[in-house]
Length: 129
Image (cartoon, rainbow, N blue to C red; front, side):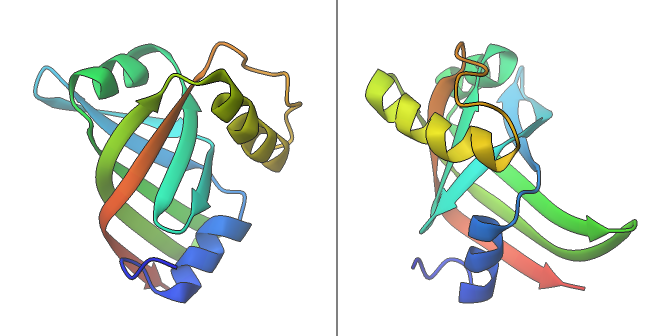
């Protein structure tokens, strides 16, 4: 595992099916949107399109925030900053889709217009409430 996050945070990111909020930049302003993700050893994979993808192509510096709540009470949260890379490889996209979509209850064939983006995490913080 990577040493950017403690093992507990990495396990939670890998096992919990919660939404991440991806922040990209456009016109020197943040653009934040919810995304489904897959975490593996310091890398976050997301499937996306539209404004988020265009922003990443222009500026690969991104941030992510993931928080687990139960009954309106925060349990834990992870914030990460990293560098995104657009992966224009259909086989790798299919592999990522097979990991991400079922995790969130969607069929593997859903959202086929999305593009795979991998984010290498450079810094992060973890809080358990």
